Image (tube, rainbow, N blue to C red; front, side, top):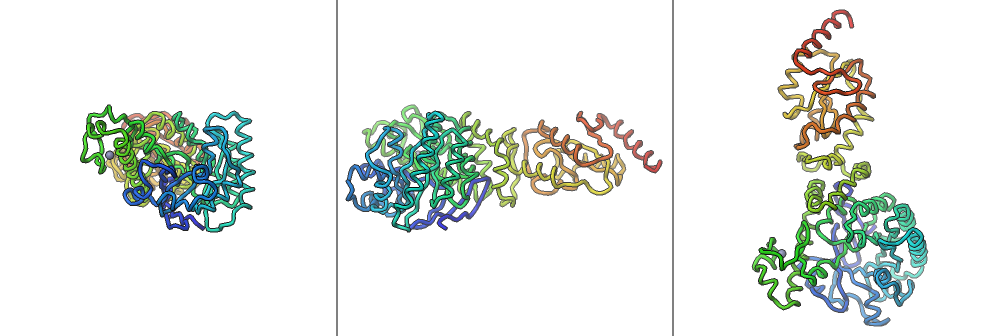
Length: 511
Ligand SMILES: [Zn+2]
């Protein structure tokens, strides 16, 4: 097996990808390298930036150097792992290319590419249904055929997933590709969808593919390389990225940051301390000849990408990918919309997220989006399906979650217990967001008292309380300070005292 998962957080993972040129840690990004001319040389990408993996284009090599081209490592001057694309992107952009699926597969073997891609047919972001169906059908047909053309067993092969925004087609294609002998699966066609900032569709596409693909194969999100969206894709399970954006943006005078892109000539100060920016000011970047400026900007952009990849990997190790994601997604409303889409995939995230909390750090809740965390979904699921109230405690008292944690050691809880005279048939539970209902005996379990929340009481708890009341078989239920179907409301201390007397009398009456 060429891919091994070392750590997980959400559906994101740290993995080791073995190629014949070495072992690569994922998630990572491969800079797109032109085999003929580059802003940053491939050897500098390795020596200065630490990239052991690049992607270049076999079709361009074929056109430029002909059928007898040399080893791709020699052509590019890069001795790490090289993935080659097949020209399918050119097919998407220019509508036609001058090679065949068989020729380009055999050619990639000939030039000793370490990871090859079949010549699939990209769906693109604008295809209609019928066109999308055709691209999927043809991609699957070529994928099956391509396997018989392979001769070199040490090379890895990528089987792209097409279908675009048609999720049933994405699923069909992912299933078919997952059954075939491929080691990596690129998810095709996201570029135009990302250019339109349609992150909701992107989220749908990634999850749809991931759900049916073999988990031991890395997923490569084709053409995605802006640092601001990497964490969202990683959290959903993408392992590999490629991007030419660092260089393309540089040519256009655009300066990347972790949270967006700016025009360098509109800046007053450089908000970065990478080796390029730390010793320069804006004038130094703007008033140099264009070619030099492009080089400097491309290097800065790449440092930003490297920094983001490192911090994403670190957050997976720490178990704080959700926090990382929340901060990134707040940098653009469309990205935030993409994150809100996770509410549709709570079950998927929970299934993939490791149950063990690695750092025992508390969870942070900012607003309703934080409520989509897998820990919340997991807890609510379990309290509903697996929890039974303690034997004999058949009167439920619901009180709001106190500020003090753990709840069962708070002053207000102790006071309530005392007022109600510590009765054995009485079960005190706490209500409020984010966890809905917390039985007092569970209130010291992680993460029920290890969280900080800015949500307050919230609204989400109502549904949990109603489900709890309907399923746990209490004889009677009382709720402090709120109105909920199935429970009697207690609004004041006097009422609470009356309740205590009432329970007492009934007890004496043999109840
Ligand atoms: Zn910089």
